[in-house]
Image 1 (tube, rainbow, N blue to C red):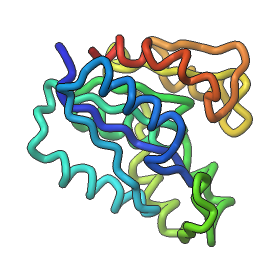
Image 2 (image 1 turned 90 degrees about the horizontal axis):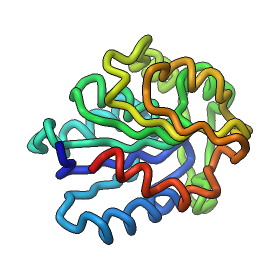
Image 3 (image 1 turned 45 degrees about the vertical axis):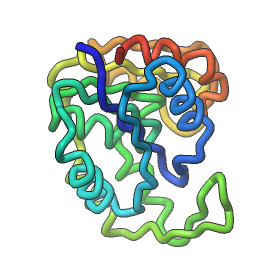
Image 4 (image 1 turned 135 degrees about the horizontal axis):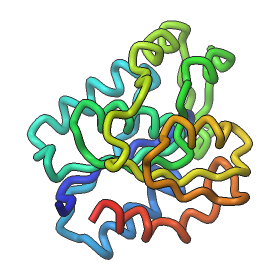
Length: 192
């Protein structure tokens, strides 16, 4: 079924101004101008982030909605895909962000704008634990782009967690997927 509504979720310390978000937005506008596109700035609180997304998308047609998520956004995208039963594309997705982000409590800056600060609180780690998905229910709904060269997340943990999904495993690469422009067509092909 063709996607009519597409949600893009950025990662930790990222924003809608990220390179991948901008590349995806441009590709969607070029190839699928009738698709409803939304890439929100997510608050630091995982609970608040998902509450805001659920509220803003309450009238979206779930049968034709899809979600793309990068890093922590991939974790959120998985949570939403399991809740909504929709297709999801995951870009170097975080699998256990509560464990990984517990060492990053306190003042943080936004990667694309170091003048923007936010606090990452201990309570947010508990909120992430509450959102963990032990196993995806329908792997055929998922497409993951995973770089073996990811310097932040373990590619083996990602591929294990999304076993059975369509996985584009890159032999090198990095966490940011610096060559994302070479993969965006495959992302949209999966969703179209």
